[in-house]
Amino acid sequence: MKENTMPQGFDILIRNALVIDGTGAERYAADVGVSGDRIAAIGNLAGARAEAEIDATGLILAPGFIDSHTHDDRILLSAGDMTAKVSQGVTTVVGGNCGISLAPMPEPVRKPVTPPLDLLDETGDWYRYRTFADYLSALEEQPAATNSAMLVGHTTLRAIAMDDLNREATPSEIAAMQALVQEAMQAGAIGVSTGLAYPPAQAATTEEVIEVCRPMAAHDGLYATHMRDEGDYTIESLEESFRIASEVGVQLLISHHKLAGVNNHGRSVETLALIDKQMKEQPVCLDCYPYTASSTILTADHARNSPKTVITWSRPLPQYAGQTLDDVMEVMGCAFEEAVQRLQPAGAVYFRMHEDDVQRILKYVPTMIGSDGLPHDENPHPRLWGTFPRVLGHYSRDIGLFPLETAVFKMTGLTALEFGFADRGVVREGTYADITLFNPDTVIDCATFENPKTLARGIEAVLVNGTIVWREGQSTGARPGRVLRRSRKAEATA
Image (tube, rainbow, N blue to C red):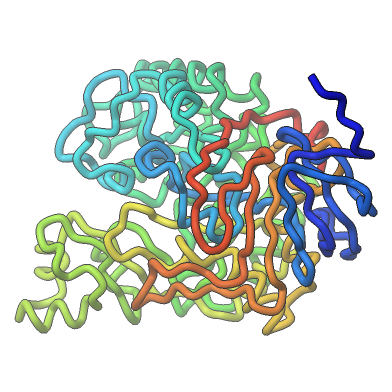
């Protein structure tokens, strides 16, 4: 082989960038050299050369964003270019949330698929992985454009182990679920999630959840919860969540923290004070999305308490996706209860939060950013395509809720630290080259409730494990993503 006489050579060299490194530190000017899947050098690399060069003049170079809360379990395999995510600068997604995971499924899934499991696949065909190890192997054998880390869902386990979801589990059923948790954790799951607000898990007692989760303690798992209530009984639900994680002996993640319903507007002052106090007693973290509307399956209770409800999908009546429930009722010529019943199974967006609470929770220093997007909805909530640019453009630049360095920290270094993703979430020599380049003057979300599948502006290039996956407004087709495991939190390098 011909000897390389260049002063310094890289696979990719990014010149003239302003680096926001993901730690919260102030930005600085530098070139960044990438070799293989790692950041090899940062500084003045004027004399260096590379196989590919990117001029980042006027751009921010940040760690790739980590989406702390997704339902991407299936789309990682069915549409692995992950356009909705990489177009926002996201390089890692955390799936298996809200008690809903695509695996394990030792026996064929019961049909029709029980909501909310149908958020991942309404036909049940994708519930094909008998063990969690089988599922993770599929992700590794057919990589996506992004990295992924997966939780195992308590609701999925209930659907496997129980013949009646409207009651608490028996000791033998709990033992069966414990065995499935043990297998998932050994295979590489990062923890267990619950969706106690959903009907299939509402009958589960606190004690059931504690016992089902116990096997993950030995693996330093994470307990991520869509709490039992995010409205009138939010405080009681927080206390239950603290107790579950404490008794199991694991870290708690409060998913998509919010205050729903007009009676609860402003109560984030109370909830954040309680969370802040509890953080001194046990490991607790939280995430949120930057919108005043939520999205999940259509239920009469949710819609009844929402000033406005938009249908995102309906299996029997797909023509109503994107329309408000009021308009659907008018077209159908029927009352509320009948309209909801005729649409189901279905999904909906609910406008039940207050902007003041959203901003207060976003601004809270330990809050991570998670989209909670639903990629299989016909007319999804715009958070699927817009969450991260919205935080950067609308909340940081336009409103001035926090500096850009803080915004980046909330979606990179903080998240890597809480989840235990070693050598991710920061721009530093030796870390994995998950990198996002964006224009701080133009970055903004463009997805709306009327046109939710719209690309954001200002995301110029995205690298995952040293490979360019997004450039010049389109996917490159590369799929270098990996399945991430959870390291001990103290070993995370944010």
